[in-house]
Image (cartoon, rainbow, N blue to C red; front, side, top):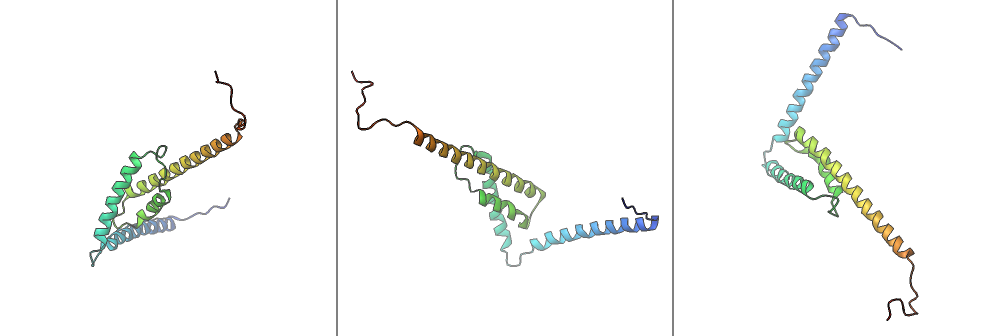
Length: 144
């Protein structure tokens, strides 16, 4: 295993460079937020408000429409929402959590959809393999 030894001066320089890089990254993140917020034509703010309202509806639906009992969840759209959240001008760490939850929920919905498809296929197979009576001969079992 290779090892390197640094004198105190080299170590301190690396440490200071790292601290400066972290500070610069923080400044750039703040600048990104500021630039995203600029809207000279006043188009971003209303669109952002629209998306926030739709996210509220999405959260309500995810919380109240159980994928076990609700068919046809638009899972591709949920994943798309999760992917696009980071482009929001007012993106927050809470949005990161929401994106994770939406992806997880979409996965759960897909699992239930696959289970339903498998159960349907099994039922169709069982029905096809069920014994059939002779339709040409009348039944005499319950005749009195």
